[in-house]
Length: 98
Image (cartoon, rainbow, N blue to C red; front, side, top):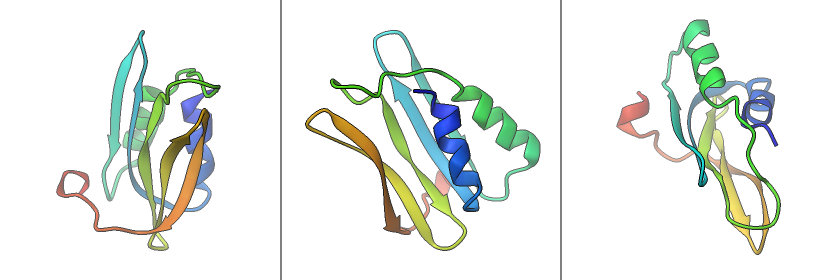
């Protein structure tokens, strides 16, 4: 699975900010997209997470939250070998993303 392609879908819903990490035996990536980001910052964020990860059975590799302009957010979940994104109402945005 490609993390960038997965997150790009959310931009059609109006991304306000995001914090994503990818962690496995081969790589450790952390990317943040702050409120008020520019198009260049958005592309840098997407380029940083443009990696393949294993979304199959086993340990979760993709983590994060994506806040949307409508006050909702997505978080990454894993349970018993399955994983995906869950849509929630928006919590307070951390200071490091403001």
